[in-house]
Length: 142
Length: 142
Length: 142
Length: 142
Image (tube, rainbow over all chains, first blue to last red; front, side):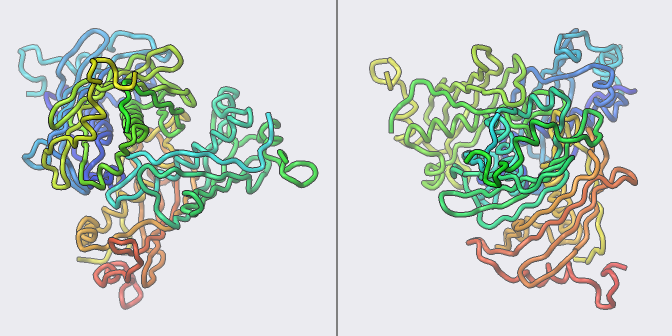
């Protein structure tokens, strides 16, 4: 497991994600954020699938998105992700989606840690370690 | 619980279901079939949610769709459903989607009965009764 | 065309909207908001499809969602919608999703008016009339 | 542009694609087929986006899927695609989705060539060349 100060997930726009405006439907970016989030955990050595198998669920409890410019079919999108906030039972990730150098969409998701019954629990230690800034205040992997 | 010889589910096309061709994306009809299926079971007094709570799962094991004409945003669709085939562990439903009198899409789904572990099981008796033709060979609810 | 001070759209949770947490996936509510929005315009006599035919597009430029409690398969959801803010080129709608008396999800979408080329335009007069509070300060339809 | 006798597209299962059965929802594979199809055209030098810009649309007119085993969250799927049939106005692609050596899902889509008005047209020559078997009867790229 290793901490990542910043992470970039790349994905191409699917046809199913377009709508009749000829651009990506606004709900599709919410899924792109989620894909980036799971890729981040997976690459850091803590796959979300294993977290759920251990009884740790991370539902989204808050979501914000700002749509600046539309993405189009087959665009190659770069979804940049960083930890914006970290609490005992929840954390916030911030996302920025670019096509080359153009910022298209920004967003934030607050995720809470819950058990199988839907009760709030403490974030597990290995996840906290992953999400924490490095001791010297610099990003963990620098 | 009551048998229904034929069932019609009505639903309006959502914006998210359109794609950049300006029509409903072909995968959306698969969800419309599913919604019709669940509405049919629910109205017949055997909600699918309760079937799953009893440990009976009905995954789709085969799917066919023929797309004749496109549906468009806000079209009011009528999804007609009938039982096409009934076996010990599986059954087939046939669907026809109309906008007014125009046939847009036809399809079939074969559904198998499985337990929580994904093993084939017999269809439960109440579901068989629901799906069976009436004793007199005429539709059950006629 | 008639102004609606508040509007409630009802829809049942589809199977495709659930995820492996056993609840409705967080992106599905974004589509429920959109469906409520189009139903509102349609019932008020100004269908969104006709707005687009006239060259008026209303893309979402900002989205916020707070997830309080999960919705489940076949739940009957009531999506309440009201106009929260109205400007020259944009307006904000607020949504609250209930299952019976329980508040599940709240959200806001800011929608901008654009032409076919994606340039900001003034909201058309009939849409402004629809979205405006009544002259006497009371809701328009009271 | 180069002919590909067989093409494999790789994609990981997204959380949004799972349903409450704990597996990938059956409609999601229809989108995986489509993603494979567009990747195939793109890698062969004939991006679908450019076809549409030239006024050539390839809607799905028939779809078949057989679901053999379920895919699960974060599974790495290999979608193998080959040309199964080629006619003047339409062609059929066959798909097989594997997780490692296990066959999960098979399918076929028949795609028709249409112009912007939705009328059948001949497949454009460069697309026919791409989809045709090599003159010697062996796959084109062998």
